[in-house]
View 1 (cartoon, protein in one colour):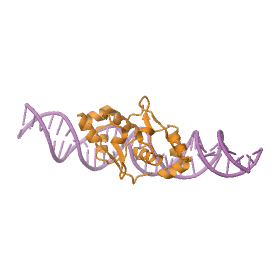
View 2: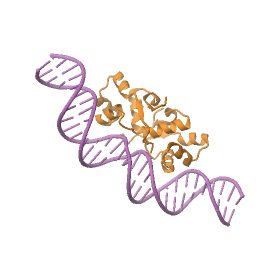
View 3: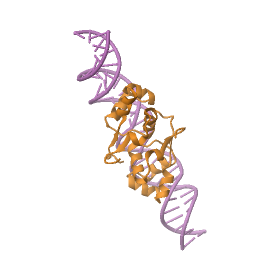
View 4: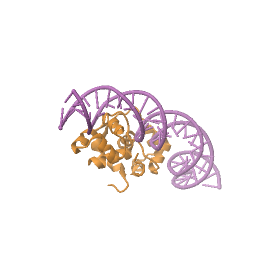
Length: 72
Length: 72
DNA sequence: TCATATTGCAATTTATATTTGACATTTAGC
DNA sequence: GCTAAATGTCAAATATAAATTGCAATATGA
């Protein structure tokens, strides 16, 4: 599909605001630490379920957390 | 991962509002018609890039288009 | 210094999103 | 009724998200 599109995010900022480690956030949304690390370094393209879980746990709207290159 | 979570969406409503067929919407976001059909019938969990593309093309915020069972 | 927590990174495996191609069903117009 | 466009759906293949394991690097505190 759309693999030229790059997603940016503010997961790390929101995570640190909440005082969570990568591991703690990973446990809260039930993924591995590596998955959180990859998302924070924008190495790939997570699914909407995971993004919604992160949005819930981090108390931010999806739109505040994720946007497309050139978007916003 | 989080496979118990069910994502709901308003893709079909937003698509019809814009007057697009599934095929036209699929072309705009560069996926197949089947992918749009599966998302509309909530059969699975799209990636954030695709959701953001849909959000752009349909002129809706992510939060208006996607939410978790029990959420909102 | 030593020990531990945290993060980065890479290879491999598993699960699943997405494609492809095909055919059935529905819908709307003639 | 017929026809064509739009949609639903299925099976098989491919692409990639996510898991798993392991190890290095860096920070932090005793």
